[in-house]
Image (cartoon, rainbow, N blue to C red; front, top):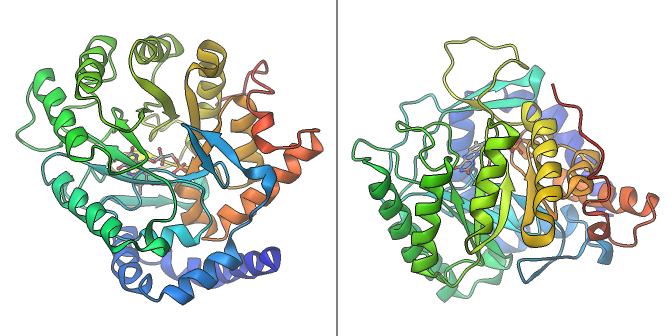
Length: 379
Ligand SMILES: Cc1cc2nc3c(=O)[nH]c(=O)nc-3n(C[C@H](O)[C@H](O)[C@H](O)COP(=O)(O)O)c2cc1C
């Protein structure tokens, strides 16, 4: 039933919905998704029915990570729902873990619009949001309300809260940045299963101030001192040399960091055809092999001392399986949902089981790192 429903949903999306929404401006599509999703998720029986049709459950998918037992290794990456507006809709798609945010300590308007530009031929979205969000206090209040409502249809899944540095005219030196992150960490203490520190947003006024080893060490020392209840995960950059990246991994290993999410939007535009005047950085296919190769090298370097979530251009089961075999315990996606539709999560889950079992693994998690000795060809 699930396979038939997902196949029908994919046909409806790719032949009916996508041609219509891809004619609309992507900023409007995103805004409409949040507005309409906020009320649609209130129709709880419909959400439950959709989830039952879309998800793919299999004992072979159950994944242990960060002391959590997840129904599958697939996570929603940060960025789609910054203010925890549509958790009921996102849960319906069949993920094992959700990420909300990035949020910042101050309310943040982000960059001037437009925020998004599609590159359909390259299966990529150019993103230039600049961390627009309603601020951590509002999100913390929302999380407390959702918890107090005790609404299992909204928040049944484990989730990460992604925190970034506020991107506005008040941004100061490294010490100010550390303080900014720590205020968000304190506001979200205990309100999620995990906290992800987004140190790698490429769309900000001051750049990525915490992707150098010294600044990262200062930040992580302060976060260690803040001692939130949740494990800390770092969202890593895409456009570093391996040596620069490895230095950041080594800093993470010196602190209370449980895992790395690899990786963020890509700045390098060589692999796509686009108007140079368009502002922003690339999601989707241009990130795919690059991030898989960074996952592989990180796994070889850090072994099981860090739990890796691999993401970038995951549109089908083979893309997800490549990241797992390279060393990722978890696989996340955003662009796959946009380009392939909401049935993509269940489809990937099913394909993952088939791929792992064809290689002789009883569980998908048994395949983690199984091809880490084979370099990934990158463009
Ligand atoms: C619409 C959109 C918004 C994003 N916003 C954020 C964000 O707020 N924080 C963050 O860490 N990453 C953000 N990202 C980056 C994604 O989390 C992810 O790292 C990147 O898009 C690669 O994954 P994908 O190819 O599956 O999209 C955003 C990506 C997209 C497409």
